[in-house]
Length: 84
Image 1 (cartoon, rainbow, N blue to C red):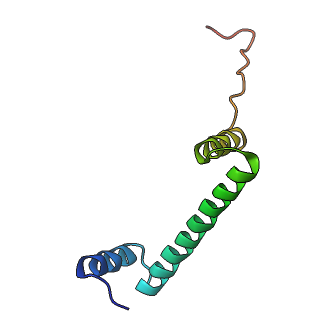
Image 2 (cartoon, rainbow, N blue to C red; image 1 turned 135 degrees about the vertical axis):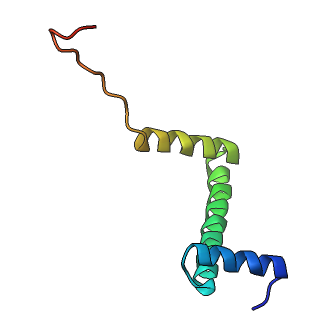
């Protein structure tokens, strides 16, 4: 497999920095591209099915993730004798 010289150099440098082989680096890049493609296809299909734009779906996903991933602040209780 060959690449443009600058791209090949960048790939080798990044693989080295990650302490993986060029093949492992390229395999991970391919897996990420497949995941991205599947997500984009799902967004298109879900948008049609739900009647929402892609930006509306992304915003709903962001809200859902914020609600499930971000820990909610718990109120702090003051001790009866603590100084304020």
